[in-house]
Length: 188
Image (cartoon, rainbow, N blue to C red; front, side, top):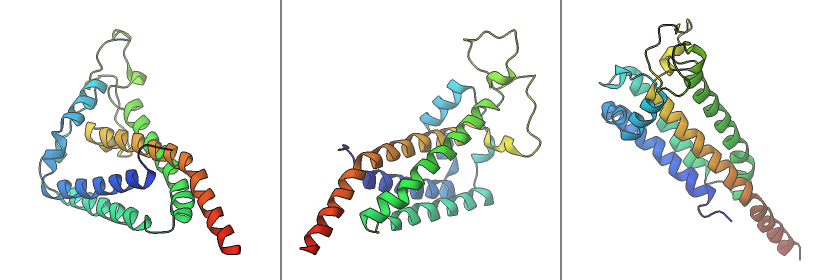
């Protein structure tokens, strides 16, 4: 049995999304200046982006999407455990993990500090630099995703959804046994 239940983790992630939405709406610079964002961005050599300095319509739209996701995830937890944890979150957790993993890999592998664009003069163990003369920006607008705030958000989401997925797999047998006992007690 897991130390923290999947419902508790999902509730925490949902409330994190709602809280993050508030800060994107009210004070986006406070998110961009967090220590975790700075540390992950610097260690991976991912560039700093100035788009989070002031409020903007795009950040307000992002806040509305995060509020929608947060509240809909909270409401989904009100369903019976068999439906909610096994069927709904049993498919949502691995799907969200894979999508977040894809974004993390895209941001790292195709960003300016990527080993793909590494010049021969740089050693393998040198600190990655966000300035790389051999880097060519994406033509379709994907460079907007190659910043340290997006990387940090997707990295934390990826770890959290993997944790939820593993916890759901651990709790699955307990939930099904409880359902079986309830069904057998109603039959007799």
